[in-house]
Amino acid sequence: MRLAVVIAAIAALGALGAARPAPVEYSLAPVFEGDVLKAVAVEVRFVGEADGDTRVRLPNDWGGETELYRHLSPVAAEGGEATVESPGVLLIRHKRRARVTLRYQVGSGYPGDPPAGNPYRPVIRPAWFHLLGEAVFAEPEDRYQAPARFRWRDWPKDWTIASDLDHHGGRRLQVGDVLQSVSVGGPDFRIVTRPIDGGDVRLAMRGRWDFTPDRFADLVSSVLDAQRRFWGDKKGPYFVTLIPTDGALTQVSIGGTGRGDAFAMFATANATDSALRYVIAHEHIHTWVPRALGRMPKEDEAGSYWFSEGFTDFYTYRTLLRTGVWSLEDFAKYANESLSAYDASPVRAEPNSRILKDFWNDAQVGKLPYQRGMLLAFYWDAEVRTATNGAKDLDDVVFLMRRWREAARTGDEVGYVREAFAKAMKEVAGLDIAQDYARYVDAGEPVVLPADLFGTCARITAEARRTFERGWDPEATSRAGNVVASLKTDSPAYAAGLREGMKIVRREAGVVGDARVEYAVRVKEGDGERVIRFMPEGKDRFTMREIVIVPGLDETARKACAARIGGA
Ligand SMILES: [Zn+2]
Image (cartoon, rainbow, N blue to C red; front, side, top):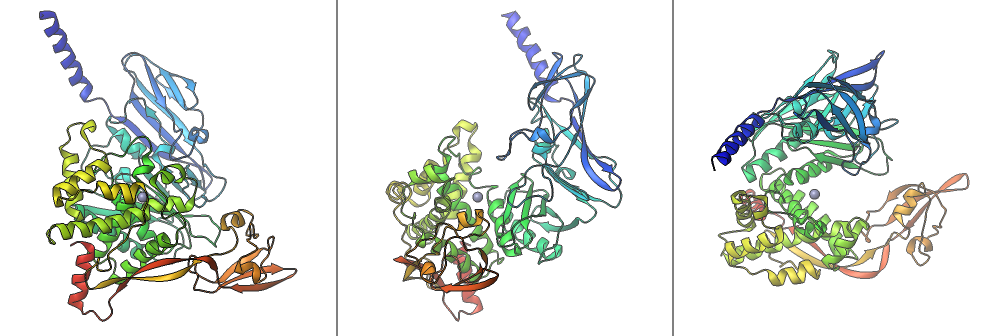
Protein backbone atom coordinates (compact mmCIF):
# COMPACT_ATOMS: atom_id res chain seq x y z
CA MET A 1 0.00 0.00 0.00
CA ARG A 2 2.71 2.43 1.01
CA LEU A 3 4.68 1.53 -2.11
CA ALA A 4 1.68 2.37 -4.27
CA VAL A 5 1.38 5.80 -2.64
CA VAL A 6 5.06 6.54 -3.32
CA ILE A 7 4.71 5.48 -6.94
CA ALA A 8 1.62 7.66 -7.34
CA ALA A 9 3.51 10.63 -5.88
CA ILE A 10 6.41 10.15 -8.30
CA ALA A 11 3.99 9.81 -11.20
CA ALA A 12 2.37 13.10 -10.17
CA LEU A 13 5.75 14.84 -10.04
CA GLY A 14 6.56 13.41 -13.45
CA ALA A 15 3.32 14.77 -14.79
CA LEU A 16 4.12 18.21 -13.36
CA GLY A 17 7.53 18.15 -14.97
CA ALA A 18 6.04 17.15 -18.32
CA ALA A 19 3.39 19.88 -18.20
CA ARG A 20 5.88 22.63 -19.08
CA PRO A 21 8.25 21.25 -21.70
CA ALA A 22 10.77 23.57 -23.36
CA PRO A 23 9.30 25.21 -26.45
CA VAL A 24 10.10 23.98 -29.95
CA GLU A 25 11.71 26.98 -31.67
CA TYR A 26 11.17 27.57 -35.37
CA SER A 27 12.67 30.18 -37.67
CA LEU A 28 12.48 31.02 -41.34
CA ALA A 29 15.20 32.77 -43.41
CA PRO A 30 15.61 33.53 -47.12
CA VAL A 31 18.13 31.81 -49.39
CA PHE A 32 19.04 34.26 -52.17
CA GLU A 33 21.18 33.80 -55.26
CA GLY A 34 21.91 37.41 -56.11
CA ASP A 35 18.47 39.06 -55.95
CA VAL A 36 16.60 35.85 -56.67
CA LEU A 37 14.88 33.93 -53.87
CA LYS A 38 15.85 30.28 -54.37
CA ALA A 39 14.62 28.63 -51.19
CA VAL A 40 13.80 29.26 -47.55
CA ALA A 41 16.03 28.04 -44.74
CA VAL A 42 14.24 26.40 -41.81
CA GLU A 43 15.69 25.92 -38.35
CA VAL A 44 13.96 23.77 -35.71
CA ARG A 45 15.41 23.70 -32.17
CA PHE A 46 14.09 21.42 -29.45
CA VAL A 47 15.08 19.44 -26.38
CA GLY A 48 15.35 15.74 -27.20
CA GLU A 49 13.50 12.98 -25.37
CA ALA A 50 14.83 11.59 -22.10
CA ASP A 51 15.42 8.14 -23.63
CA GLY A 52 18.02 9.48 -26.09
CA ASP A 53 16.15 9.33 -29.35
CA THR A 54 13.53 11.57 -30.88
CA ARG A 55 11.51 10.83 -33.97
CA VAL A 56 10.86 13.81 -36.27
CA ARG A 57 8.13 13.92 -38.90
CA LEU A 58 8.98 15.86 -42.04
CA PRO A 59 6.29 17.37 -44.29
CA ASN A 60 4.66 14.43 -46.09
CA ASP A 61 1.02 13.77 -47.00
CA TRP A 62 -1.38 16.65 -46.52
CA GLY A 63 -4.50 18.03 -48.21
CA GLY A 64 -4.34 15.48 -51.02
CA GLU A 65 -0.67 16.26 -51.75
CA THR A 66 1.88 13.50 -51.14
CA GLU A 67 5.62 13.27 -50.45
CA LEU A 68 5.97 16.93 -49.52
CA TYR A 69 9.45 16.09 -48.13
CA ARG A 70 10.66 15.94 -51.74
CA HIS A 71 11.05 19.73 -51.69
CA LEU A 72 13.41 19.60 -48.67
CA SER A 73 17.20 19.47 -48.81
CA PRO A 74 18.88 16.78 -46.66
CA VAL A 75 18.36 17.66 -42.99
CA ALA A 76 21.47 18.57 -40.98
CA ALA A 77 21.30 17.77 -37.25
CA GLU A 78 23.38 19.49 -34.56
CA GLY A 79 23.42 17.94 -31.09
CA GLY A 80 22.43 14.53 -32.44
CA GLU A 81 22.86 11.97 -35.18
CA ALA A 82 20.04 11.83 -37.76
CA THR A 83 19.12 8.71 -39.71
CA VAL A 84 16.26 8.33 -42.16
CA GLU A 85 13.84 5.85 -40.62
CA SER A 86 11.42 5.96 -43.54
CA PRO A 87 10.70 8.57 -46.20
CA GLY A 88 9.44 11.57 -44.26
CA VAL A 89 10.56 10.31 -40.84
CA LEU A 90 13.93 10.97 -39.20
CA LEU A 91 15.27 9.30 -36.08
CA ILE A 92 17.62 11.58 -34.10
CA ARG A 93 19.91 9.88 -31.55
CA HIS A 94 21.23 12.23 -28.92
CA LYS A 95 22.30 12.50 -25.28
CA ARG A 96 19.35 12.42 -22.88
CA ARG A 97 17.43 15.69 -23.13
CA ALA A 98 20.10 17.15 -25.43
CA ARG A 99 19.47 20.42 -27.29
CA VAL A 100 19.00 19.48 -30.94
CA THR A 101 18.97 21.85 -33.92
CA LEU A 102 17.73 20.73 -37.35
CA ARG A 103 18.52 22.80 -40.45
CA TYR A 104 17.22 22.32 -43.98
CA GLN A 105 16.12 24.28 -47.01
CA VAL A 106 12.75 24.15 -48.74
CA GLY A 107 12.53 24.73 -52.49
CA SER A 108 9.49 25.38 -54.66
CA GLY A 109 6.95 22.65 -55.31
CA TYR A 110 6.18 24.08 -58.75
CA PRO A 111 8.33 24.86 -61.80
CA GLY A 112 6.76 28.31 -62.27
CA ASP A 113 3.83 30.31 -60.89
CA PRO A 114 1.47 28.25 -58.71
CA PRO A 115 -1.18 26.46 -60.80
CA ALA A 116 -4.94 27.12 -60.53
CA GLY A 117 -6.79 25.17 -57.87
CA ASN A 118 -5.23 24.54 -54.49
CA PRO A 119 -1.43 24.92 -54.73
CA TYR A 120 -0.65 23.51 -51.29
CA ARG A 121 3.01 22.75 -52.07
CA PRO A 122 5.60 25.39 -51.16
CA VAL A 123 5.58 28.31 -53.60
CA ILE A 124 9.01 29.96 -53.94
CA ARG A 125 9.23 32.52 -56.75
CA PRO A 126 12.17 34.81 -57.53
CA ALA A 127 10.59 37.71 -55.62
CA TRP A 128 7.90 36.19 -53.37
CA PHE A 129 6.84 33.08 -51.47
CA HIS A 130 3.74 31.39 -50.04
CA LEU A 131 4.11 28.63 -47.45
CA LEU A 132 1.58 26.47 -45.63
CA GLY A 133 3.07 25.15 -42.39
CA GLU A 134 2.31 21.50 -43.17
CA ALA A 135 4.46 21.73 -46.30
CA VAL A 136 7.47 23.34 -44.61
CA PHE A 137 7.92 22.59 -40.92
CA ALA A 138 9.20 19.41 -39.27
CA GLU A 139 7.44 18.17 -36.10
CA PRO A 140 9.23 16.33 -33.30
CA GLU A 141 6.88 13.41 -32.66
CA ASP A 142 4.07 13.88 -30.13
CA ARG A 143 4.78 17.60 -29.67
CA TYR A 144 1.70 18.87 -31.55
CA GLN A 145 0.39 20.57 -28.42
CA ALA A 146 3.81 21.50 -27.02
CA PRO A 147 4.65 25.22 -26.75
CA ALA A 148 6.38 26.75 -29.76
CA ARG A 149 8.16 29.93 -30.80
CA PHE A 150 8.54 31.39 -34.25
CA ARG A 151 10.77 34.11 -35.65
CA TRP A 152 11.77 35.53 -39.02
CA ARG A 153 15.54 35.70 -39.68
CA ASP A 154 17.54 37.88 -42.11
CA TRP A 155 14.75 39.10 -44.41
CA PRO A 156 15.61 42.17 -46.48
CA LYS A 157 14.17 45.46 -45.23
CA ASP A 158 12.24 46.09 -48.43
CA TRP A 159 10.41 42.76 -48.20
CA THR A 160 6.93 42.62 -46.67
CA ILE A 161 6.61 39.40 -44.68
CA ALA A 162 3.52 38.24 -42.83
CA SER A 163 2.16 35.14 -41.14
CA ASP A 164 -0.55 34.16 -38.70
CA LEU A 165 2.43 33.14 -36.54
CA ASP A 166 3.07 36.87 -35.99
CA HIS A 167 0.00 37.05 -33.74
CA HIS A 168 -0.79 34.54 -31.07
CA GLY A 169 -4.13 36.00 -30.17
CA GLY A 170 -3.20 36.27 -26.52
CA ARG A 171 -2.68 32.52 -26.46
CA ARG A 172 0.60 30.64 -26.25
CA LEU A 173 1.79 29.42 -29.62
CA GLN A 174 1.84 25.63 -30.01
CA VAL A 175 3.64 23.38 -32.49
CA GLY A 176 0.24 22.63 -34.04
CA ASP A 177 -0.24 26.35 -34.77
CA VAL A 178 3.11 26.42 -36.58
CA LEU A 179 2.12 23.43 -38.69
CA GLN A 180 -1.31 24.93 -39.40
CA SER A 181 0.06 28.32 -40.47
CA VAL A 182 0.30 30.38 -43.63
CA SER A 183 3.30 32.64 -44.31
CA VAL A 184 3.88 34.97 -47.24
CA GLY A 185 6.47 37.51 -48.27
CA GLY A 186 7.82 39.64 -51.07
CA PRO A 187 8.43 43.31 -51.85
CA ASP A 188 5.05 43.61 -53.59
CA PHE A 189 2.75 42.16 -50.90
CA ARG A 190 0.21 44.68 -49.65
CA ILE A 191 -0.98 44.49 -46.05
CA VAL A 192 -4.28 46.02 -44.96
CA THR A 193 -5.75 45.77 -41.46
CA ARG A 194 -9.39 46.23 -40.44
CA PRO A 195 -11.15 45.90 -37.06
CA ILE A 196 -13.64 43.04 -36.65
CA ASP A 197 -15.68 41.81 -33.68
CA GLY A 198 -13.21 40.76 -30.98
CA GLY A 199 -10.02 41.60 -32.88
CA ASP A 200 -8.46 42.68 -36.16
CA VAL A 201 -8.21 41.04 -39.54
CA ARG A 202 -4.95 41.50 -41.43
CA LEU A 203 -5.02 40.93 -45.18
CA ALA A 204 -1.85 40.17 -47.18
CA MET A 205 -2.19 40.01 -50.96
CA ARG A 206 -0.28 40.45 -54.18
CA GLY A 207 -1.08 40.40 -57.89
CA ARG A 208 -3.28 42.40 -60.25
CA TRP A 209 -7.00 42.22 -59.59
CA ASP A 210 -10.16 44.06 -60.56
CA PHE A 211 -10.34 45.42 -57.01
CA THR A 212 -7.97 47.22 -54.66
CA PRO A 213 -6.57 45.71 -51.44
CA ASP A 214 -8.59 48.30 -49.49
CA ARG A 215 -11.83 47.31 -51.18
CA PHE A 216 -11.08 43.63 -50.63
CA ALA A 217 -10.23 44.23 -46.97
CA ASP A 218 -13.59 46.02 -46.55
CA LEU A 219 -15.47 43.07 -48.06
CA VAL A 220 -13.59 40.44 -46.07
CA SER A 221 -13.80 42.27 -42.76
CA SER A 222 -17.54 42.91 -43.13
CA VAL A 223 -18.11 39.17 -43.62
CA LEU A 224 -15.88 38.04 -40.75
CA ASP A 225 -17.34 40.66 -38.45
CA ALA A 226 -20.92 39.65 -39.33
CA GLN A 227 -20.26 35.97 -38.75
CA ARG A 228 -18.40 36.47 -35.46
CA ARG A 229 -21.29 38.60 -34.19
CA PHE A 230 -23.81 35.97 -35.24
CA TRP A 231 -22.11 33.11 -33.36
CA GLY A 232 -20.76 35.39 -30.64
CA ASP A 233 -17.97 33.16 -29.35
CA LYS A 234 -14.81 33.89 -31.36
CA LYS A 235 -12.20 36.44 -30.36
CA GLY A 236 -8.68 37.28 -31.40
CA PRO A 237 -6.87 38.33 -34.56
CA TYR A 238 -7.49 36.79 -37.98
CA PHE A 239 -5.26 36.70 -41.05
CA VAL A 240 -6.19 36.31 -44.73
CA THR A 241 -3.81 35.79 -47.65
CA LEU A 242 -4.62 36.04 -51.35
CA ILE A 243 -2.23 35.06 -54.14
CA PRO A 244 -2.84 34.76 -57.88
CA THR A 245 -2.68 31.36 -59.55
CA ASP A 246 -1.89 30.60 -63.14
CA GLY A 247 -4.82 29.34 -65.14
CA ALA A 248 -6.74 29.27 -68.38
CA LEU A 249 -8.48 32.61 -68.78
CA THR A 250 -11.72 30.90 -69.82
CA GLN A 251 -12.26 29.58 -66.29
CA VAL A 252 -12.38 31.15 -62.87
CA SER A 253 -10.66 29.10 -60.19
CA ILE A 254 -10.84 29.92 -56.48
CA GLY A 255 -9.23 27.70 -53.87
CA GLY A 256 -8.35 28.03 -50.23
CA THR A 257 -7.78 26.39 -46.92
CA GLY A 258 -8.83 27.34 -43.39
CA ARG A 259 -5.97 27.76 -40.91
CA GLY A 260 -7.86 28.10 -37.65
CA ASP A 261 -6.94 31.75 -37.11
CA ALA A 262 -6.36 32.45 -40.80
CA PHE A 263 -7.55 31.70 -44.30
CA ALA A 264 -5.18 31.11 -47.22
CA MET A 265 -6.77 31.88 -50.55
CA PHE A 266 -5.73 31.25 -54.16
CA ALA A 267 -7.48 32.56 -57.27
CA THR A 268 -7.01 33.14 -60.96
CA ALA A 269 -6.71 36.84 -61.74
CA ASN A 270 -10.20 36.92 -63.34
CA ALA A 271 -11.94 36.13 -60.03
CA THR A 272 -14.36 38.84 -58.88
CA ASP A 273 -14.32 40.21 -55.36
CA SER A 274 -17.92 39.09 -54.78
CA ALA A 275 -17.02 35.48 -55.71
CA LEU A 276 -13.99 35.62 -53.40
CA ARG A 277 -16.14 37.08 -50.63
CA TYR A 278 -18.63 34.23 -51.00
CA VAL A 279 -15.87 31.62 -50.70
CA ILE A 280 -14.46 33.28 -47.58
CA ALA A 281 -17.96 33.56 -46.08
CA HIS A 282 -18.63 29.86 -46.67
CA GLU A 283 -15.25 28.71 -45.36
CA HIS A 284 -15.44 30.94 -42.30
CA ILE A 285 -18.83 29.42 -41.35
CA HIS A 286 -17.00 26.08 -41.21
CA THR A 287 -15.33 27.46 -38.06
CA TRP A 288 -18.64 26.44 -36.42
CA VAL A 289 -20.45 24.11 -38.84
CA PRO A 290 -20.18 21.22 -38.24
CA ARG A 291 -17.45 20.90 -35.57
CA ALA A 292 -18.92 23.23 -32.93
CA LEU A 293 -22.35 21.60 -33.32
CA GLY A 294 -21.65 17.89 -33.40
CA ARG A 295 -19.55 15.05 -34.64
CA MET A 296 -19.19 13.91 -38.23
CA PRO A 297 -19.08 10.14 -38.78
CA LYS A 298 -15.53 8.84 -39.34
CA GLU A 299 -16.68 6.48 -42.05
CA ASP A 300 -19.14 7.50 -44.73
CA GLU A 301 -18.66 11.16 -43.85
CA ALA A 302 -20.25 12.26 -47.14
CA GLY A 303 -23.55 10.87 -45.85
CA SER A 304 -23.69 13.87 -43.49
CA TYR A 305 -22.57 16.51 -46.00
CA TRP A 306 -26.21 17.63 -46.31
CA PHE A 307 -25.62 19.02 -42.81
CA SER A 308 -21.98 20.12 -42.88
CA GLU A 309 -22.13 21.75 -46.36
CA GLY A 310 -25.85 22.50 -46.73
CA PHE A 311 -26.18 24.19 -43.32
CA THR A 312 -22.90 26.01 -43.97
CA ASP A 313 -24.40 27.52 -47.12
CA PHE A 314 -27.63 28.33 -45.27
CA TYR A 315 -25.71 30.21 -42.56
CA THR A 316 -23.47 31.86 -45.13
CA TYR A 317 -26.55 33.30 -46.83
CA ARG A 318 -28.22 34.14 -43.55
CA THR A 319 -25.30 36.02 -42.03
CA LEU A 320 -24.54 37.94 -45.24
CA LEU A 321 -28.17 39.05 -45.53
CA ARG A 322 -29.03 39.86 -41.94
CA THR A 323 -25.99 42.09 -41.50
CA GLY A 324 -26.53 44.02 -44.71
CA VAL A 325 -23.43 42.74 -46.51
CA TRP A 326 -25.92 41.40 -49.05
CA SER A 327 -28.99 43.28 -50.24
CA LEU A 328 -32.26 41.36 -50.64
CA GLU A 329 -31.50 41.22 -54.35
CA ASP A 330 -27.99 39.81 -53.74
CA PHE A 331 -29.54 37.13 -51.56
CA ALA A 332 -32.16 36.26 -54.18
CA LYS A 333 -29.51 36.10 -56.92
CA TYR A 334 -27.26 33.66 -55.03
CA ALA A 335 -30.12 31.60 -53.62
CA ASN A 336 -31.68 31.33 -57.07
CA GLU A 337 -28.42 30.12 -58.58
CA SER A 338 -28.41 27.26 -56.11
CA LEU A 339 -32.17 26.65 -56.36
CA SER A 340 -32.20 26.54 -60.16
CA ALA A 341 -29.09 24.35 -60.30
CA TYR A 342 -30.89 21.94 -57.95
CA ASP A 343 -34.15 22.05 -59.92
CA ALA A 344 -32.30 21.44 -63.19
CA SER A 345 -29.99 18.79 -61.75
CA PRO A 346 -30.52 15.33 -63.23
CA VAL A 347 -29.44 13.84 -59.89
CA ARG A 348 -31.66 15.94 -57.60
CA ALA A 349 -33.83 12.97 -56.55
CA GLU A 350 -30.93 10.56 -55.99
CA PRO A 351 -30.82 8.94 -52.54
CA ASN A 352 -28.18 9.81 -49.95
CA SER A 353 -26.43 6.52 -50.76
CA ARG A 354 -25.60 7.95 -54.21
CA ILE A 355 -23.84 10.90 -52.53
CA LEU A 356 -21.79 8.43 -50.48
CA LYS A 357 -20.82 6.59 -53.64
CA ASP A 358 -20.23 9.43 -56.10
CA PHE A 359 -19.56 12.66 -54.17
CA TRP A 360 -15.98 12.79 -55.43
CA ASN A 361 -16.62 11.19 -58.84
CA ASP A 362 -19.48 13.20 -60.30
CA ALA A 363 -19.59 17.00 -60.28
CA GLN A 364 -23.44 17.10 -60.14
CA VAL A 365 -23.57 14.62 -57.26
CA GLY A 366 -20.81 16.62 -55.55
CA LYS A 367 -23.10 19.69 -55.50
CA LEU A 368 -26.20 17.81 -54.34
CA PRO A 369 -25.63 17.80 -50.53
CA TYR A 370 -24.95 21.58 -50.64
CA GLN A 371 -28.20 22.25 -52.52
CA ARG A 372 -30.36 19.69 -50.72
CA GLY A 373 -29.03 20.60 -47.27
CA MET A 374 -29.57 24.32 -47.78
CA LEU A 375 -33.16 23.84 -48.99
CA LEU A 376 -33.82 21.54 -46.04
CA ALA A 377 -32.46 24.19 -43.69
CA PHE A 378 -34.91 26.74 -45.17
CA TYR A 379 -37.71 24.17 -44.91
CA TRP A 380 -36.92 23.27 -41.29
CA ASP A 381 -36.47 26.93 -40.36
CA ALA A 382 -40.07 27.52 -41.54
CA GLU A 383 -41.29 24.42 -39.66
CA VAL A 384 -39.76 25.68 -36.41
CA ARG A 385 -41.33 29.12 -36.85
CA THR A 386 -44.74 27.61 -37.51
CA ALA A 387 -44.51 25.15 -34.62
CA THR A 388 -43.49 27.89 -32.16
CA ASN A 389 -45.80 30.63 -33.51
CA GLY A 390 -42.79 32.61 -34.66
CA ALA A 391 -41.04 32.56 -31.27
CA LYS A 392 -38.13 30.40 -32.47
CA ASP A 393 -36.27 29.53 -35.64
CA LEU A 394 -33.41 27.32 -36.82
CA ASP A 395 -30.85 29.50 -34.99
CA ASP A 396 -32.27 28.32 -31.66
CA VAL A 397 -31.82 24.73 -32.81
CA VAL A 398 -28.14 25.05 -33.80
CA PHE A 399 -27.33 27.15 -30.73
CA LEU A 400 -28.77 24.36 -28.56
CA MET A 401 -26.57 21.86 -30.43
CA ARG A 402 -23.57 24.05 -29.66
CA ARG A 403 -24.45 24.14 -25.94
CA TRP A 404 -24.65 20.34 -25.88
CA ARG A 405 -21.32 20.12 -27.67
CA GLU A 406 -19.66 22.47 -25.14
CA ALA A 407 -21.17 20.58 -22.19
CA ALA A 408 -19.76 17.25 -23.39
CA ARG A 409 -16.84 16.33 -21.16
CA THR A 410 -15.18 13.95 -23.58
CA GLY A 411 -15.13 13.66 -27.35
CA ASP A 412 -17.10 10.39 -27.07
CA GLU A 413 -20.03 12.22 -25.49
CA VAL A 414 -20.46 14.49 -28.49
CA GLY A 415 -23.43 13.38 -30.56
CA TYR A 416 -23.32 12.85 -34.31
CA VAL A 417 -24.77 15.82 -36.17
CA ARG A 418 -27.68 13.83 -37.60
CA GLU A 419 -28.89 12.57 -34.23
CA ALA A 420 -28.06 15.81 -32.41
CA PHE A 421 -30.01 17.91 -34.91
CA ALA A 422 -33.09 15.67 -34.65
CA LYS A 423 -32.91 15.81 -30.85
CA ALA A 424 -32.56 19.61 -30.87
CA MET A 425 -35.53 20.00 -33.27
CA LYS A 426 -37.63 17.99 -30.82
CA GLU A 427 -36.43 20.01 -27.84
CA VAL A 428 -36.82 23.48 -29.41
CA ALA A 429 -40.00 23.01 -31.45
CA GLY A 430 -41.45 19.64 -30.45
CA LEU A 431 -40.91 18.42 -34.01
CA ASP A 432 -40.18 14.80 -34.88
CA ILE A 433 -38.15 14.86 -38.08
CA ALA A 434 -37.64 11.08 -38.49
CA GLN A 435 -40.03 11.13 -41.47
CA ASP A 436 -38.22 14.13 -43.00
CA TYR A 437 -34.90 12.28 -42.72
CA ALA A 438 -36.38 9.19 -44.37
CA ARG A 439 -38.00 11.12 -47.23
CA TYR A 440 -35.72 14.06 -47.98
CA VAL A 441 -32.30 13.01 -46.73
CA ASP A 442 -32.20 9.24 -47.20
CA ALA A 443 -34.57 8.68 -50.14
CA GLY A 444 -33.73 12.03 -51.75
CA GLU A 445 -37.29 13.15 -52.46
CA PRO A 446 -37.07 16.69 -53.92
CA VAL A 447 -37.60 19.33 -51.25
CA VAL A 448 -40.79 21.36 -51.70
CA LEU A 449 -40.72 24.91 -50.36
CA PRO A 450 -44.02 26.57 -49.39
CA ALA A 451 -44.80 29.58 -51.61
CA ASP A 452 -45.04 31.79 -48.51
CA LEU A 453 -41.72 30.57 -47.02
CA PHE A 454 -40.54 34.16 -46.69
CA GLY A 455 -43.87 35.68 -45.67
CA THR A 456 -45.25 38.32 -47.99
CA CYS A 457 -42.08 40.19 -49.02
CA ALA A 458 -40.62 37.48 -51.24
CA ARG A 459 -42.49 34.92 -53.31
CA ILE A 460 -41.35 31.60 -54.67
CA THR A 461 -42.52 31.23 -58.24
CA ALA A 462 -42.49 28.05 -60.32
CA GLU A 463 -42.21 27.83 -64.08
CA ALA A 464 -41.89 24.95 -66.58
CA ARG A 465 -38.54 25.13 -68.37
CA ARG A 466 -36.53 23.12 -70.85
CA THR A 467 -33.43 21.38 -69.58
CA PHE A 468 -30.10 22.91 -70.62
CA GLU A 469 -28.19 20.95 -73.26
CA ARG A 470 -24.87 22.23 -74.51
CA GLY A 471 -24.44 19.19 -76.73
CA TRP A 472 -20.81 18.37 -76.01
CA ASP A 473 -18.98 17.16 -72.91
CA PRO A 474 -17.41 20.32 -71.40
CA GLU A 475 -14.83 18.46 -69.28
CA ALA A 476 -13.62 16.18 -72.08
CA THR A 477 -13.55 19.19 -74.42
CA SER A 478 -11.52 21.27 -71.98
CA ARG A 479 -9.08 18.37 -71.45
CA ALA A 480 -8.67 18.14 -75.23
CA GLY A 481 -7.60 21.80 -75.40
CA ASN A 482 -11.10 23.11 -76.22
CA VAL A 483 -11.51 20.69 -79.12
CA VAL A 484 -15.17 19.59 -79.18
CA ALA A 485 -15.51 16.07 -77.75
CA SER A 486 -18.45 13.68 -77.17
CA LEU A 487 -20.93 15.77 -79.19
CA LYS A 488 -24.49 14.42 -79.26
CA THR A 489 -25.70 14.16 -82.86
CA ASP A 490 -29.31 14.88 -81.83
CA SER A 491 -28.41 18.16 -80.10
CA PRO A 492 -29.29 21.69 -81.30
CA ALA A 493 -25.53 22.43 -81.43
CA TYR A 494 -25.03 19.63 -83.95
CA ALA A 495 -28.04 20.77 -85.96
CA ALA A 496 -26.48 24.26 -86.10
CA GLY A 497 -23.29 22.88 -87.65
CA LEU A 498 -20.96 22.13 -84.72
CA ARG A 499 -18.88 18.96 -85.16
CA GLU A 500 -16.50 16.92 -83.03
CA GLY A 501 -12.88 17.96 -83.59
CA MET A 502 -13.69 21.65 -84.09
CA LYS A 503 -11.66 23.93 -81.84
CA ILE A 504 -13.67 26.40 -79.76
CA VAL A 505 -11.96 29.80 -79.63
CA ARG A 506 -14.43 31.22 -77.12
CA ARG A 507 -18.06 31.40 -76.09
CA GLU A 508 -19.56 34.69 -77.28
CA ALA A 509 -23.06 34.37 -75.79
CA GLY A 510 -25.08 32.13 -73.53
CA VAL A 511 -25.50 31.33 -69.86
CA VAL A 512 -24.42 27.94 -68.60
CA GLY A 513 -27.50 26.16 -67.22
CA ASP A 514 -30.07 28.46 -68.85
CA ALA A 515 -31.81 26.98 -71.91
CA ARG A 516 -33.64 30.27 -72.63
CA VAL A 517 -30.53 32.19 -73.67
CA GLU A 518 -29.03 31.70 -77.12
CA TYR A 519 -25.57 30.13 -77.15
CA ALA A 520 -22.88 31.34 -79.54
CA VAL A 521 -19.46 29.73 -79.87
CA ARG A 522 -16.65 30.95 -82.10
CA VAL A 523 -14.81 28.00 -83.68
CA LYS A 524 -11.76 27.67 -85.92
CA GLU A 525 -12.58 26.63 -89.46
CA GLY A 526 -9.69 26.21 -91.85
CA ASP A 527 -7.67 29.43 -91.70
CA GLY A 528 -10.65 31.44 -90.52
CA GLU A 529 -13.21 31.44 -87.78
CA ARG A 530 -16.97 31.04 -87.64
CA VAL A 531 -19.65 31.66 -85.02
CA ILE A 532 -22.22 28.91 -84.45
CA ARG A 533 -25.49 29.93 -82.75
CA PHE A 534 -28.16 27.72 -81.23
CA MET A 535 -30.68 27.49 -78.38
CA PRO A 536 -29.15 25.11 -75.81
CA GLU A 537 -32.42 23.24 -75.20
CA GLY A 538 -32.56 19.65 -74.05
CA LYS A 539 -35.47 17.29 -74.64
CA ASP A 540 -36.84 17.29 -71.09
CA ARG A 541 -38.82 19.82 -69.12
CA PHE A 542 -38.58 20.55 -65.42
CA THR A 543 -40.13 22.95 -62.93
CA MET A 544 -37.82 25.76 -62.00
CA ARG A 545 -38.40 27.79 -58.89
CA GLU A 546 -37.29 31.31 -58.30
CA ILE A 547 -37.26 33.60 -55.29
CA VAL A 548 -38.72 36.96 -56.31
CA ILE A 549 -38.45 39.94 -54.00
CA VAL A 550 -41.75 41.79 -54.18
CA PRO A 551 -41.09 45.06 -56.06
CA GLY A 552 -41.74 48.48 -54.58
CA LEU A 553 -41.08 47.68 -50.91
CA ASP A 554 -40.23 50.77 -48.88
CA GLU A 555 -37.15 50.96 -46.66
CA THR A 556 -38.96 49.72 -43.54
CA ALA A 557 -40.48 46.79 -45.40
CA ARG A 558 -37.10 45.91 -46.93
CA LYS A 559 -35.48 45.90 -43.49
CA ALA A 560 -38.25 43.71 -42.09
CA CYS A 561 -37.90 41.37 -45.07
CA ALA A 562 -34.12 41.03 -44.63
CA ALA A 563 -34.66 40.40 -40.92
CA ARG A 564 -37.21 37.69 -41.61
CA ILE A 565 -35.20 35.83 -44.25
CA GLY A 566 -32.00 36.46 -42.31
CA GLY A 567 -33.53 35.16 -39.10
CA ALA A 568 -32.83 38.28 -37.06
ZN1 LIG B 1 -17.73 23.76 -47.32
